[in-house]
Amino acid sequence: MTEPDQLQIDTISTHFCRISSFPLQVLFMTRNLVTVVCLIFTTFMVAKASDYEPLLTFPDNQPQFVDLTVNDSLRDRDIPLRVYFLQHSQAAPVILFSHGLGGSREGSGYLGRHWAARGYVVVFLQHPGSDTSVWKDEAPLNRMKALREAASAKNFLLRVKDIPAVLDQLDKWNKMGDHALAGRLDISKVGMSGHSFGAVTTQAVSGQTTRWGKELFTDSRISAALIMSPSSPKLGTPESAFGKVTLPWMLMTGTKDIAVIGNADMKSRLEVFPALPPGRKYELVLFGAEHSAFTERALPRDNEPRNPNHHRVILSLSTAFWDVYLMGNISAREWLDGDGPKSVLDKQDKWQRK
Image (cartoon, rainbow, N blue to C red; front, side):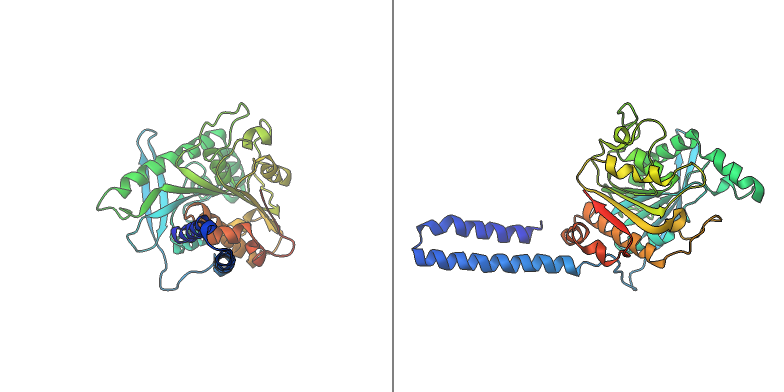
């Protein structure tokens, strides 16, 4: 609630406290006045929700990007970044994005451009060892084998440790007066997101626990997580992995979201949401969406034509989610927790929250 809204409520409460000493006629007049004020206030709040538009951007306020590299000297590891941001000096919430197996910082740019246009600084990580370097120099017949080998526990550990290393460096750059990101970052408001292997990475750093109930990789700087193509762990139960997640989580998958590598099937994807505790949890299931629906290009084994509305839904719901949990936008909350999502979903898409 904003300060003006709270002020109106406080004023109404003050009237209630004072009217006990008024004549009965004044009491009725005051009560009617309070009713009118409450109706006006309620109408104003509904109007604010209906006016919210998560796809709205301004043509004269387009984001730019800069390519940077984080050197993690403790691990002797370079982590390439692509950072999208608007050309203004005000500090903005930060969204991290972790790519899928064989991807790079250049992928899924439609997300970076839109989120940045909405006022966020969006940081796309590239994870060496499970990025494009795995397959780009391989002969076509050897690429699948190379990708399968890269989907390893070793690369998972490298990925989850990339997240705090990048956040540490972003904080340092933010305080350097001559850096391109100086003063642009609000590190107190960090969103984490990712697709496929990046979803596994996101789950691990935003509250997933081991089968023994340990949070090994959670980073306390993360405020909310968007997980595209989630999956249950191979060891333990979904309840043991996700039953203690306290952060806001939004899950996105499709009815045909099956990965060729990693053996993540629809059962694994759909087990995550029921295992999460109630409170600030959301799930989107796009009808007919394959694994590549969350990216900008089809994969070689795709069978379905791409639905252009899928990206519209992804952008709408993800933007509203960030606006609620990183910006504290009341209108976005009314839209997200109300009937707003229905305005962009196709009839057979599935949307739920708890």
